[in-house]
Image (cartoon, rainbow, N blue to C red; front, side, top):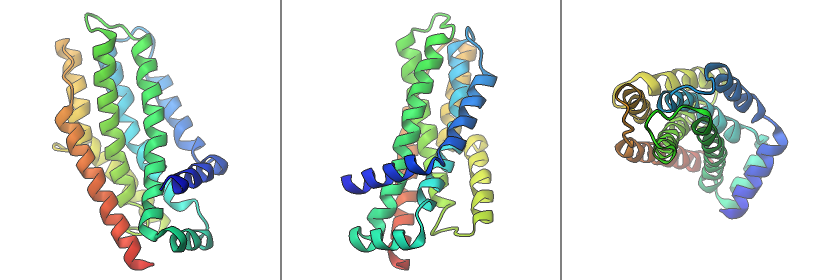
Amino acid sequence: MTALLRYQTALLLRSQRWLAPFLLYAAYVGVGLRPGEPVVGALGYAVTGLVPVAAWGVRICLGKEPPAARAVIAAAAGPARAHLAGILTALAAVLLVAAVTVLGVTAVSDHRGVTPLTAGTAGLLAAAVCVLTGTAVGTLSSRPLIAPRGWSLAALLLGSLLALVTTGSPAHAAVTSLVTGDRTATVPLPWPALVGAVLLAAVAAAVACRLTARRM
């Protein structure tokens, strides 16, 4: 798996397809936030954009290989493992961006009675929830479940929106906890949402990998 992850990471970096989602996310955070804003509310805004970014990242990692190269890797390492490596590569890349963003937002925001450690911890947990939820959305809206690009993109956008606004979604719960904390000057840690997001991403990856193995 280590070799597959290195291969997928090298492909992702060389393709430069990651520039579009990450630059758009940087613009989203830069335009929407200003130094000195309440830290909890600022973190709540920042992490919402991670859901579509993670979904987009998974879609990129699962679609960047030419069919011939994908067939060779699947034959050598197994289609399920190759597919999982693409998902994990996207997950790791977006988690790195999320961590940098949360630390940066925490550093420049107004803490207003909330310690940086508490705010940063809550922000990192909420960011992880949003990234994992977005990973599940991207996994379920990409090949082999939805192969046509148009339908895949539509499913990605709709899934990201529903993940943020639907009650019961881990991402919705994590963002709501930050928004509520901003109003009450408390910072609840979204542990239940994190557990739900991990399970959701794991189930989505298992379904996609199993279906990939059957179709090869």
